[in-house]
Amino acid sequence: MPAPFHEVLFPLDIALKSSGGPERLTDIVTLGSGREERNTRWAHSRRRYDAGYGVKTLDELRAVLAFFEERRGRLYGFRWRDRLDGCSAVLGTNVSPLDQPIGEGDGARADFPLTKTYGGAYAPYARPIVKPLADSVRIAVAGIESAPAHFDCDAATGLVTFVAGHVPPPGAAVTAGFRFDVPVRFDTDFLEVDLSAFAAGAIPKIPLIEIRP
Image 1 (cartoon, rainbow, N blue to C red):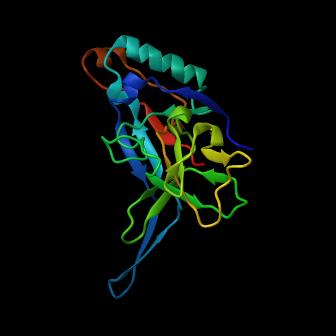
Image 2 (image 1 turned 90 degrees about the horizontal axis):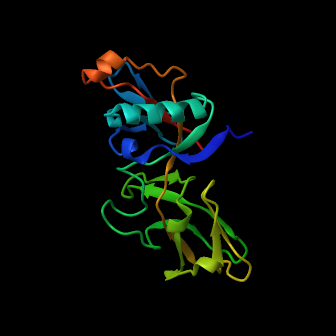
């Protein structure tokens, strides 16, 4: 059963001043020869953030407190806007329906999950995108943009479904452009705030961790 999730966005003005990024888990064994054997335990990276850097005023602190309480600490997941990596396009450019390959038509397949691919020369990584901004999704089939009426996109799962009569034909490349959020939860059940330290300029720690699809 999927973990409980609230389709609500963490306060955006606070999120935009946060820190964090992707994490991976790699086992490294050093052999007697000095060579290494390396193996990754995770197929997908997992992002961690600290929202504390965005809290500068008591009003912002109260907003985070209310958000934390409504999520019941670590119980409910929520949406997080990653300022560095929240778009299918290169940072600073507009979304295009040709941004990311998401599959190839066979004349019968109607469902295509959104993905974002990183790299390409050596070991490209396809990241599942499960929290797109629905009104931002653009789709193209064989390089021609599809009309919004020709497909549906589930904003809670990132699954694109073509409607009857518009299923991609065999061999047709299906591409997509989109903006997206990251599904996260609080990584603590205790939101510790020292008001005397906060008044002196200390930053509270508000750890968040990505929920894997």
